Length: 254
Image (cartoon, rainbow, N blue to C red; front, side, top):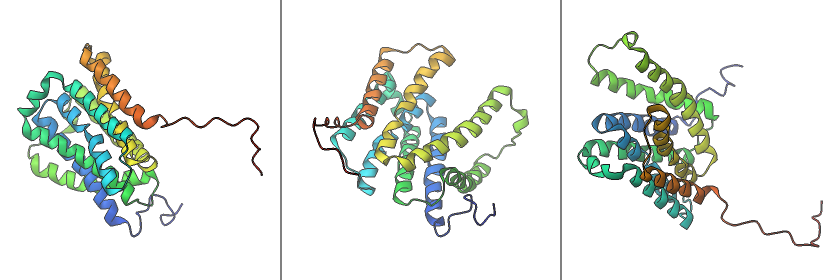
């Protein structure tokens, strides 16, 4: 396959929108989230980051004119209620790290905005090459910031096995598969529906700690699970059952 006909070729005439999407979706989320995690506890930071669905539903109604239905409003309310239960008694701790909280809320907002922009300004590329180009464009400012901010020597070969495996996992799973999967979902599903689906991620994180870290979930964790599942049900389940077929109705003509 030649470069001209390759689906990996850059989108002719669509570079401005691709660059904007990459800056918001890749740079905004990753830079703000990394500093947010450094400035506050990682568990609280993750929960604040996944307030993204609330921003996603509101932005999709404003920019994409998607209907802000009662079901979506209920989904946002249930999902945010679940996030409050996951935070539990640590809400005051969030207030003690305002800059970190601001970074994480900003990361959530940029992620939601990037998702909505992908729908508003579609790029004529397959999901795999679209994801790859976003990462390639987003790498430039991230690398420039890293070189400016991190002035100490860095030797990845000096890392122990645990952090090295963490880096490899993020490269292979988080940055390759997960970004591709999210781009695919964002392209196929309405922005509001795709956004609400992400509310399951921090719940999975909390209950994964049971298997990995041996932590014991509290009643508030189970309450959060119920609320988040309810939030997903508001957009996944059909709004009404299909009308039953009328006996004796005429068969459709061919």
